[in-house]
Length: 330
Image (cartoon, rainbow, N blue to C red; front, side, top):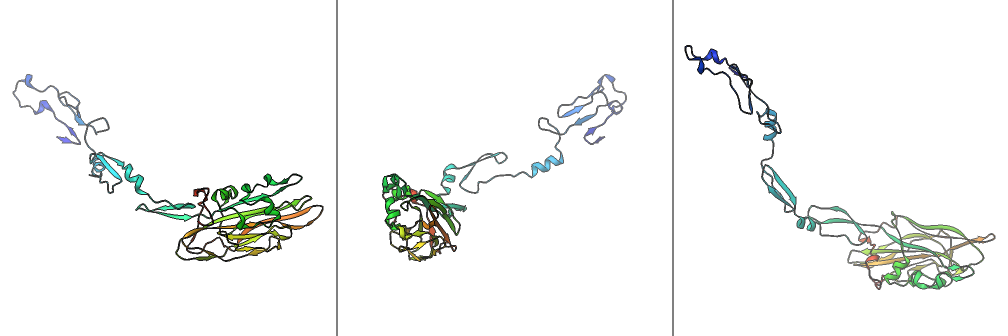
């Protein structure tokens, strides 16, 4: 009889009577994966197959094999297949993958998402370029030899003693990069700088804050934008606050003396289909004298006015422009 993979037999009892005993089976051997206990009453068995051993296939293993995929298809041109259906090899196509995303964001923007068709969604980043600077060194004279190249194309003496205003800067991109060489990444509002400081013995020196914003109009028509900002100035000592759009004389304090609680919201008409430059420069306010001159200087944008109207977007493209490019005109 046979049961559970084992054959049980009595060889002698099963032989016909009367035959020559020399012809009887004395022992039974088996070849792998079968095994025999030998002798006249052998136990014939078979073990379960394993990684390095033949044998019978368990139902668990059969179900595992049966659930394997029968074939693999690439499905798109960026995947290549090799090998066999049972043992496929999968590789990417470098040419297709590298060329899949072939759209870049404009300068001053960042990629937010990549779509399945290879296009990207970009989000402009708010960037204000700025600088804070003094103009005069006591007992010696105007800072850096009164060299205008270090101060946006305007002599330090003009900034502090000559009613220097935003539209006086040299509009060459090389000058702008040298002058507006710090960056901040604001929210809808921005504190650019606020400071109270002491001046000893002279009103000649002034501390100023200058800021540059590059704004792109993506439409075919002019769009109004109203930036609101707090500012300081002291016209009595020829330190004005001012704003210029693309070199125009859009706004200034007219010689007034203003501490940092003063705010203004000039409306600007941003030209169509181009990138514009908005420059704001402020001077220091004189608070009074108690054995020295106490002064304050500040610039901050408020009223969520750094949220641009639809059709306008921020651009941080100054580093991509050649030194001679006029930032007022493009």
